[in-house]
Image (cartoon, rainbow, N blue to C red; front, side, top):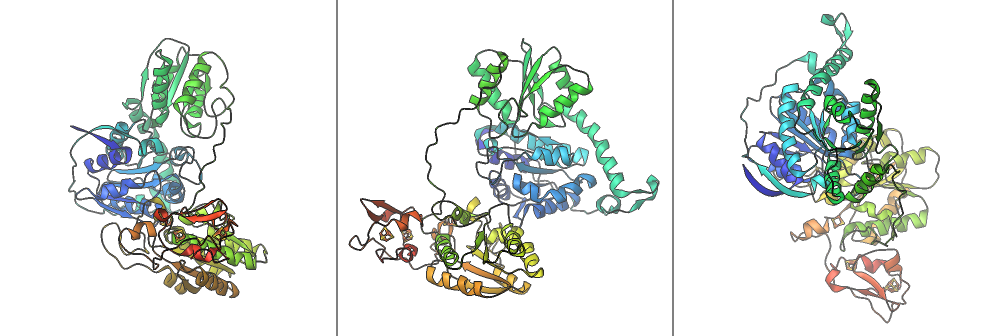
Length: 604
Ligand code: SF4
Ligand code: SF4
Ligand code: SF4
């Protein structure tokens, strides 16, 4: 074994490579993104960015059915997108070992919502899960997940949270072990064709019911595995109040114990299903336990159920009422809860911290989205109307100083939301603003629906040739995939083939962009405006930019200090001091978009 400092995502990729993973598929999503790229760096591993998480899950499952170990990688929002497939693959099971990485983001540090995918993957799909408490454990659990998946013929899930994916730690690791197995696909329709057909051998039962019974029967096997798992263990100490740490909750609990200064009775629980024997043994003799877990009271409720079934009288506290129900755990929160529980007191009411004004979310200086947002805002100002938003760097246009998009939900929702508003009778123009990666992820079907159902909207696709927000992963509109150059799929050509009227503009040219969006607005039906310009931050480094750089400066003699260029525009290079705007040369990339913003012509 060797030892090295690794980030959680590096440790997971390393463990997958050591387990002989052959196919890895994912869609970018913080905090899990880097795992796919890293896996692709190991010899013999095929890694890809699929167009969305459902497709990644399907690709990985297909590889498993073809006798190759595989892994699907996604963040929690992505697991939502993949849930339809999840609720079928749990019934069929898999062949070669397959791991699902479903990374959660407690507190929503880099997400549209905070959620707990243990509910989807375990409570709902009844699949087994590991919840790592350290980087080393993320490595060990990934390896164990491959082995146990193959043994049980079930997808095993790893649920790291942000503080594991992006945390660093010393990891003991072994050698990568490319596996050479025959890529054989054995046809077994009774298993891999999920359909409501009658099964003769089970007395005419329908197949979904039969496979459901198979999945339910697997739970006993899983419970026995988890009972024996080294990832669950009790640390005995005197006292009538016990503490249960799940995943990263255990890490916070150990830190709180160190600060508290005395050994506590602790049960580390890092698997689902729970090791019920270990839980019952731990709680015997205790009067109260506090469960620390991210994000929902999943384990807390399972323990309550277990105690009820076994007639154990125990007060079980946790996320369902004792601790704060929302947000991340922290050492401070856990320590406060430990000391309050030991003193027999309620968890103290949360005191709202003092709000420290933070820098608003905005795009990089030189970003093409800023020109697009300014132009679209101008059109909306003239015509009235609403802009529905989507996920990507352009979504910063929702906040100060742009305040443009009126809705943001999940990937691809901008287009159906836009035509839904029109179908409800809204009599002003409605615009859907969506990025290219998101368009291919889940925007295509929404566009087809809008066209098919006679929508009357203007869809604006910000086509910058990369998935910029998560770190520049390619997508079908890019000139490469993860492994090689490819011919990009032009979203405009796709939209035209569907029947949309397509318009094109360069968003660095604000006047042209506003005019083109205005022309599209004047048409009826579904119109698509392709605002095409390369992501400045990614492609600028390669010398590829979609504007002619120019030197800009504020003419102080003309500037009247109205502040429009700061209050409504938001380029980080522009500030206002002593009643005059100023452009910081070191932060300016010369895109020239600000020139259109100053109506007095003071920016030249
Ligand atoms: S990363 Fe690219 S798309 Fe995102 S804000 Fe920066 S320049 Fe714009
Ligand atoms: S540069 Fe133009 S927009 Fe900015 S403060 Fe001066 S006059 Fe106003
Ligand atoms: S100051 Fe103007 S030219 Fe410079 S990066 Fe900002 S918008 Fe572009």
